[in-house]
Image (cartoon, rainbow, N blue to C red; front, side, top):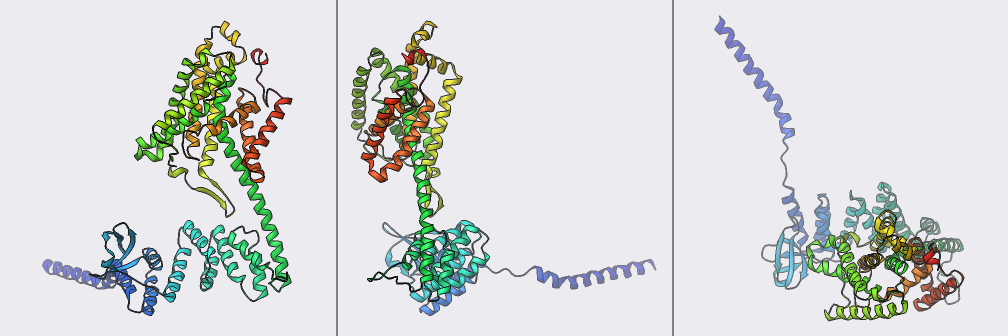
Length: 554
């Protein structure tokens, strides 16, 4: 009886298990959907681009886009640019870039490198206007619907320069779906550029309203076309309402452009001022403490620039860090040369400023000639990637990163030097010698050593200035000569030996020069600045901020 019961239970369990398997089978079939090889499917669709007729190619482009694969966009771009080819031996579709010795091939789907091939081994996939139109439409759709905001912005920016009427519906849909304001505004401008050519007056008026405040050159050109006149002096545009609105919009845009130009000139003026600050700050210390007219100061800047070039030549694999390495190296090189000059020449000429002027002028010529011996005239210094490019505020206002970094760097050097003078023993002794050399000597300060260190410090800072200057111009033996006169003007105008005065003088001269040069020219602008400083010194001989002390007042 017990065995019979066990058999019955066992049979029941088998039955339940079988039923459970039967009911679970459909669910398993839903979960384990056969996965199609997307690469294989994409390959087949791409191969269809090499069809025999342009109609079939257009259909193949439309079918390819339906796969919604991220690898499709570069293929379509390559086809539109005429870079899509097929291998003659096996019909494989490749992207080809012309290089020396043939064509560099890349598999269109996998992106694998297929090496360099001769032109007779590949065949270009040709397109006509119909295929090209389909490509442009789908490329625009793919770019404008990208998940990357920057890609959508660049796509809209590219379309803005040459909008296509066939893309209007796509643009309207993209504008409604666009979440980012700057991209949405660009798409609105594209639609406005298309609508401004409409024969309907209301559509043109709406287009002008959409262009309010736009500073893109192509948009401004469209508005100016509305205001064009015929030979009789009458507007080509027949609608007075449209021309009146176009004049109003153009006037407002011009006001914005003038404001942006003012901001740009001011920023570039501060950038020029930061270069002058770096060039003059070392001279301010040297001239202020020692009373030496150092005409070789520009060559210290030149040595710093050449040190930057040398660092990049010796460490090509560290190009991104070359400037960070060059800053201390330039300080040491220029500073060491400055100490040598002071110990060998300048120390014998104290109290004879005209003699120091002639001696340092001769030293500057010697240093220039030494550099020429190495045949390194006008060599370019590579700008690291993190300093390249520009910060674009809008189509009418942008600032290069290298000048922004130089401005920040100049402020850091100024603050660092101010801390050194205020918070260290060397700074205290330098200030003591500056204010009263005789009293400093009587207090046990070895002014001779302070002079050497001061000259070295001033020369080292000039070397750091050379690192910055190398990022805005080529490096040559005469590099320092273009800064020496301006540096002296900054020092005299700001107040000899005063860092705060040097800062305001450098920034002021930089901004004034930047605003003057476009109006009167570079040479006349410099003459006007020089005349102003001469007149200013007549009324305030000690500059903007005069040092105080018995020595400096004697």
